[in-house]
Amino acid sequence: IRDVKKYFYSDGIKVGKKQCVKAVDGFSLDILKGENVGLVGESGCGKSTLGRTILNLYPATSGTIRYQGQNIEKLSFKKMRPYRRELQMIFQDPYASLNPRRTIFQSMEEPLELFKLGDKGERKEKVIEMLNEVGIGREHLDKFPHEMSGGQRQRVAIARSFILDPKFIVADEPVSALDVSVRSQVLNIMRRLQETHSFSYMFISHDLSVVRYLCDKVVVMYLGKMVECADKKELFEHPTHPYTRALLSAIPIPDVHRRSERIILEGDLPSPANPPTGCVFHTRCKYVTEECKNVCPELKTLHGSHQVACHYAEKFYE
Ligand code: SF4
Ligand code: MG
Image (cartoon, rainbow, N blue to C red; front, side):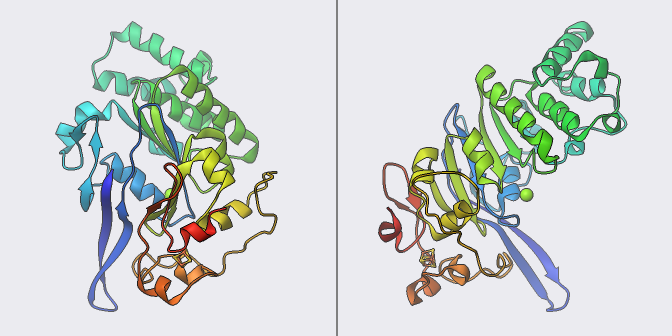
């Protein structure tokens, strides 16, 4: 993913001019085969837009997205088709992938039919096998989504996105809408799938503890930009960007390395239609200087592949 931007334009009726919302504003990342990347940040920071853009569900405003050597960012719906099989999305709301008027079996079979895989009997076998992997028995095949619990529905949606044996998955907050009691069950299923299938994924979450449980690499996003990226261990032991530190301080993880004080972020996330000048985080950063207000910090590489977008990254690294 190279310098990807996704801007939305709207006609500002009141101000009489076009407004530009910079949902993703220059994002670059390599995701290697088998790598699991966690993407974290507050809601409204552009995570979901980025996830959809890298799968070419939304056309990128600019930048390049390459999958196994092929640029996919400009492919038409039709040309994208062969890649759709390998690039899948899991949504926060399972109804985004499960049609309420179709039975579980019909919804699960649909992708196999679309790609003309197997005969009727083989497809049924595959559906049962995949549902089995997420702990849904065959007695549910003829049920409709509304006859199942939220957790079961999300498990079916996950099974559906795995039925074509994808190579890369974007999971957009798949447990955020679920009851706390069933979240860990669904996360465990994701983890089990990691062991039994070979795929890479980007797991989007506003919850660092979820990402810590599932991912190898963590990317922190703020207002459309990457502000920090590192291997999980490095990030949790040496959180450097003031925003990452604030996010980390809010989760209950016993950790010797972690600063004990809770950092409260003042103010709201600024509007991506009117982002701050200089460092995007400067309006909420307690270390802000004149330089921060005027100059946007580049991503610097600190330690190994640890990247931080802050003028004082070296100073903050401990
Ligand atoms: Fe804070 Fe300045 Fe660093 Fe931005 S560049 S995170 S405002 S210290
Ligand atoms: Mg979102």
